[in-house]
Length: 161
Image 1: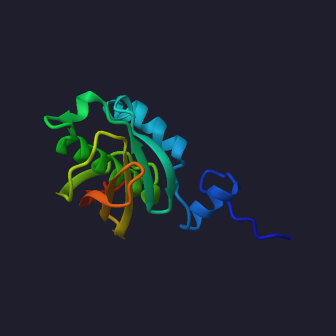
Image 2 (image 1 turned 90 degrees about the vertical axis):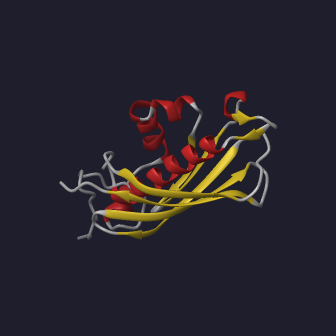
């Protein structure tokens, strides 16, 4: 006799078992990318894609086109803010599951240095997860660079039932 762990949907794959135990992301990177395509098409059209997803964390990438640059050839603040917001949304869903109606209730971004016109990488993690609110942070980098270009913190409201 074995003590198999079953996910709520009856699946017994390793990822689903870990998710059922609260130790793995409930969304896969492919799940989140599909959600962006159907639920946030502007983020999908902008090229935001999931590189990695864990329990309470996500790494996203975003190509930078001429549309995302401001005078001087640097990535615009609204572009970086949008990436940070989508990243925090992904981190929340990696813990909360398929609660796609979770919404930003507060977000603050600090621009640390001028980003060059190259793809951006966002690393987001949940700092505190409650039943109705999640608080997290996002660090943005220019691809291939170690020093961050921006840091954001935010709170997401998680609807009940």
